[in-house]
Structure formats: structure tokens, C-alpha cells
Image (tube, rainbow, N blue to C red; front, side):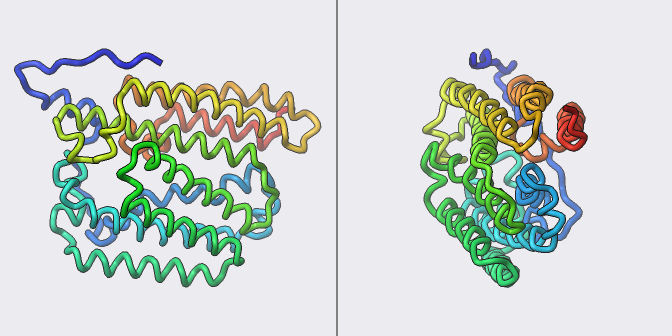
Length: 317
């Protein structure tokens, strides 16, 4: 996958160029600052708790919907605690970022002590909801919290380790969803989830690296960026594109359906388009700063996803 051609700003200024690369304009939320600190827009990531059971056994999900929703809430609380701690630790670096400097702690809307108390409350909420879950699911939520606390304290500073931890967090959500509803465990789908999320994590690092390089603040903004380069990220993403497609096909072929091979052929174009469109958003439209938002707000990707899911639901085989 070739690296993009270098772009040169005119008149010695990176202003217009930086705005185009970041693809993000400053937006001031109308929500209270403490709620913004919890990043409610990121809670959509916990839909992975439901996605895997839907793919492997929708009937079990419907039969145990209460347990699945309780798992979603527990992960949302645990992830918010991680976001609070991360923003508390990164408050100085965030002030150097064109967008992150507007986060509640970085801009002074929420004090450091108040943020820590809010994070502790989120952990307590996750623990309380965990009491409603089976032991294996509680272990998955606890493992997610411990792993991501380690990420905030140290692991995020190590290149490749940082994105791997993020991807494993999504795998834990997917596994917990299966455990919560007693759905069958499909290793091909779990590996596909890992490859997809690792791909998007690398895409986010690519976006951050381009933005930070233009500002000349890569090391100060995120120390781990020093271990990445655009050629490396492009090569790794090319490998993960192939791995995601292969594991997707293996998952479809392994489904207990009499015409699984036909279903694999029918759904393959949608999988290919989704990945190619994501790469187009990343490389051409300079998106990728918030992968979840990018995927959920891009019209071609949304339409593709609806058609993709319709093929599974209608069993067009």
C-alpha cells in the first residue's frame, strides 16, 4: 500500500492544511462537562457485546437479552472510568492537540480531583452491575478494566502494544457477549473482530501521526507515535485488511447453514467494500481520528452495512 504523496503548505503556514488533515472542527458540546468527560459518544463501541451473539445465535440473544444489556452497561461504566483516567493522565499532552485540548480536564472545566472521583464512581457502577452477571462475564469485564488501566498507566507508551491492547478490549467485549447469553463460541469471528479493530486502531494512529507531524509535536502529543511511520502503518494495515477478509470468510463458511458457501460468496463484496471505503476515508478524506464516529456517520458505509446484514437476516441462499 503506497504512502500518500507529501503535501506542502503555502506561505509557510500549516493552518489550512492541518484543518483538512484533521477533518475535525472544534465543537463545543452542550452536555455538562462531567458527562462529556465520560465520553457517551464512545459507548456505542460496547455494541460489540451484542454483535457477536447476533452473528452466531440470534435466538440465544433474544432469550437472554437482559443479561446482554447488563453486560453492555457494565462495559460502558468500565470504559468511562478508563476514559476519565486517561484524560487525567494526558491532560498536559491534550493541551497541545488541536481537538483534545477542548476536553473537560485539559481546558479546566473539570478539576483533577473531581475527575478522579468521577472515575472511581464509574468503577463502582461497573462492579455493581457485575453482580448481576455470571462469573465468567464478570471476569471479562474485570479483565477489560485491569488491562485498560495498565494501558493508561504504561502500555499506551509502547508502539504496537498500544493498538494491540485496544483491539483486545473489543475482543473481551465480544467474548463477554457470548458468555452472557450462552451463545456458541466461534473462533473465526473472534479473530475477525480482533483484526478489524486492530486495523482501525492503526488507522487512528496514522491520522494522529499525520496531524502531529504537521504541528511538529508528535513526541509531545503521544510518545508512542515515535515508534510509527506512515510506510510502516500502511504496510501493517494492508496485512490486516487481508487477515480480516480471510477470517470473515472462514466465519461464514463455518456457520451451520446448508448453503454457507453461497452465503460466503454473497456477503464477500460487502466485506470488501466496507474495508476499501474505510481506507478511502483514511487516505483520501484524511479521516480516522474517531473510527467509531466515521463508520457510523458515513452514508456509503451505513448503506453497505444494512445490505450486508440483510443478506444474513434474509438468508439469500
